[in-house]
Image (cartoon, rainbow, N blue to C red; front, side, top):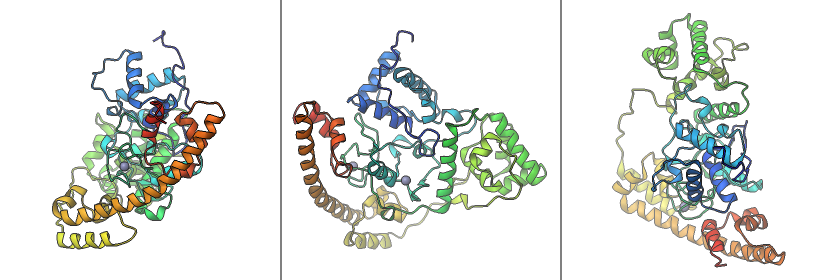
Length: 429
Ligand SMILES: [Zn+2]
Ligand SMILES: [Zn+2]
């Protein structure tokens, strides 16, 4: 690797290391691509070529779970650190917990975000970015805004539109180009207190990743759990397992088996003992007193191992009536939103209440079109003004220049900044 020039890529600064809002590697990658005004796909290919990796020609950058704890994540962190000259990129992933905690990441197609955080990025004049916490499977809420994370575009309702695309500008839909931000927490589904607790524990854990002097180890974690069992239940692990709401064999496996404890399991331990997740992971017990834990209904948030929820019987007549009422109400909600509040999937809605779901979807699109037309006019005027201003100063016009010249609020109304960039690059404006 000696022939690689350091800082071949712009040394983009990662956001929020050492805080619960730490950026994800996926987000960082997109921002590096943007800083060079190239697509994420082109950046991916360039990195593969420079590192001389053997990837197939069908490789797409978003097929790699860059924020996770796999070997692939490790390779991409290494490459990006090398090429940008920026260290600490491991803190944008779950790599520091590899081998210590077992956890799953949501499927790439279900990438989530908090609309209020995204909106806040714009209002504080920061470029919107994806938080690492959004890519941790057990996190379903934003602890700051106490709302559920969303995974469907509020405008086109498409899922898989956060970053699974060749060209990504974090914060804007890769399918329709609409802004993901929505500033009022009241417009979004409120999270339960259990979801908020889980999300804030994960936030604290990720904040700790960037600041801990030494990385947590499985041996320390196991001896900490053993000490908790000794203190709270006289060493009786079966009693402790009951306290957590788990089977004793699972706990036994975590203590002695080949695998690491699951993140969901550690959250149960944190909840039952009153330790925070970072303290549990680092074995920081000096101030801890047995019995000061607060039991929460974690079953509502965390899946129980080896137990599956019974299939629910739905009252479709009732659901159809609700959908019709929703299509008539104002402001209208999306089909995805209706599905979430009715606790069914969108697919089920379209299968069992086709006419009603379509009516609601149609109404939603109409209302968005109206809103979009007004917004677009305002945004178009602003682009024209910014364009004239930049040209007058003798600079060439690119997306970064436009972003800096346009008021943040107005930029949020742009329907498709990605397409705009393409047009600029192709010299059509
Ligand atoms: Zn938020
Ligand atoms: Zn969209």
